[in-house]
Image (cartoon, rainbow, N blue to C red):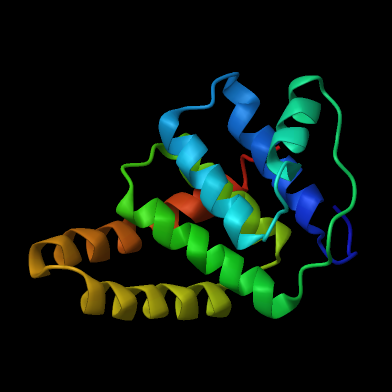
Length: 151
């Protein structure tokens, strides 16, 4: 991973690898990986090429450099997708991976959580809001714990 700027295809490849660690790509994981593909603005056919490489144990290199602003945007988008789905620890592992890969600080993470809380309050019914806000609070510790177990 190193200090170089992250690139779209490499991040996507690493995320697919994390998801396939158990050998299964669940419906929820497919939904999350599709959202990641859109957030990274991958071209038609690129997600499939990455998936095929990962399946045979190869790594995809390249893609566009992801600016800091876009790193935070991608993380927030995937976080929101994760919140509204019933995700397991396998899927939460992707958020932990992205947070680590993008070097998202505690301060940045907290700001993203606050932005998500505000977005949720605007978009959803009160009962759903209460549940999602609880999930946000629980997810912070889950993501932090998973960062230490990624690789």
